[in-house]
Image 1: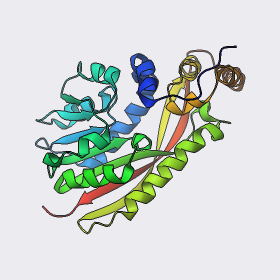
Image 2: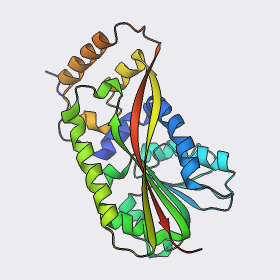
Image 3: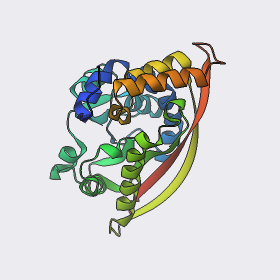
Length: 259
């Protein structure tokens, strides 16, 4: 019996999906970029950090669209993801976890913008990371955190038990961020709905390849059972027809007071 291991590491996961990651997340990336541009109010002279930057797609896009004069720091512990990031323009790869990166006292008041797009559930110590981020911001700086509150992707339909752990973690992270006692920050929260699309073929392929780390909790047999169910649910669509769905995202904006 071919059974996927139930215990996995984040490093192993991103090592296995690195080469196909961008193709599976393209629709999400394309929806995220305008939201980041709207809330970050980027200026060419800004120093920007992307935490959990993956392949560097978002960092490269922000650099290009905002005309940044300095490369975006791409902080990610995955060797394979950083290899992809190094091939992009306008990025500065840093192979570290968020905890390792923000523990450096030399980073105090170094950055104008810090972003964490769907990555906070990987923080081993959210409070330390949040405090480090706030410490690293210059006066007037912004930390923007995006987390999924409801995912309409057909892959996660009927998979609430699998995705439930993720929501527990991100809800705890939001609570911890709100509870940080710091008089020099202002926190605001917003909700945004993204419309995304993937073909049936890509949906099934991304499910089999476990493109989302939450899917690593499923065995191979459970994955194949879900693929069959998915194909049945989407029988009216051909293999390469775009299937649209919505993602509800919470956008938390932390602004450091001062000029």
